[in-house]
Length: 494
Image (cartoon, rainbow, N blue to C red):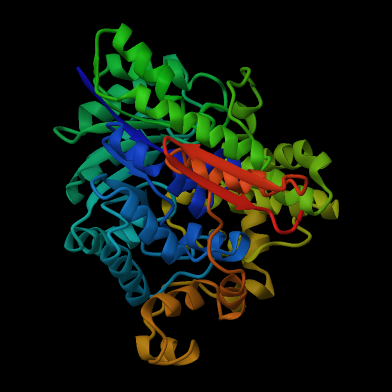
């Protein structure tokens, strides 16, 4: 069997290990080699949630990032999580805004494949009827995901039925998303045939995290059951809470008799460069994890744990991480077992952190839990299975009456533009202001200047000069190659 690979390094790998702190220059430094290595698809961080991260935390222009990535990966099929709501952790976006966002993404040639979920927070009933045609009209492939979890209601028949329902939207691929790394070999042997057998001719992919250390084994089992496309990452952004390493999976696939077209030798300099960047910026380096039963108890995805740890450290609460994870088990059960994927994983973890910090369960409640109880996130969210006492408590709050049942607002574009600068503001600037709820953070991002460069192996001289310039004791640099010579004097030291 010919095995295809989807690279997750820049998107999910960075989210899982680096809390999405992969900068534009980091991607630029290795993207060309990644693009030539033979991946069927390459994930890139061009979804709205990543745009917010670039503006707010990295202080880099995400539109410029999208353009630079597109230039570095001109022939690659570029993919990212995509949906009708540009703010999955808050108020739904008007359709016209989502349409404009993806039109601009497509105009920059930054996205060729939209990945979306069928069983998390009501996309199939609320979004698919208009988002799938929108993606198609923009020339994009569509991959629809089924998020895997363990609960009394998430049986093999549940996933078989969801697979059959997906076929109505004629996806280019269906992928199983094991965001918690929960798949075991025994479970995979019943779940994957249930999905593959109902997918008809649509290819099935597997995207799993290594949180329990089992994903590389599950991948090999999936190959035996006809899954020919696997999502992997490049070290140091593989393993740990990220996806399996392309080197490990490709080597084992060959040993099992499969054909693999990935050029690992082309990827070895990528590993070296990304590892140097990780050490330089003190970012985590992925490594295999020991088997941990706790993952089967709390189900919190690696990317969420990475961000949770980062945020708790900022609040000087990192030492209470395990308490928050323990509380998340109870909160998830109270809510009717939502799948622990965006946005529900963030809702559960946020409420759990509040419960731990205040010392009283549900003393303060985030708006999203009230909306959850109102059924805004669809039947798949689990709200019909909620603890009835908690549901009654949430629906009886004054805040519940203020919020009402939230629905996407069909506000005319001209009204939204008028609030955010008027007709003189470019589409890209307008969209940033919309996502950031005003211009303040966008202005701060602009004030920070251009993205920081991370020189790659094709630029050895600038890299050498930059490093030598850090040492004041160096008075001059004399370079010679053949009959050519160059003398550079350090005027500071002089």
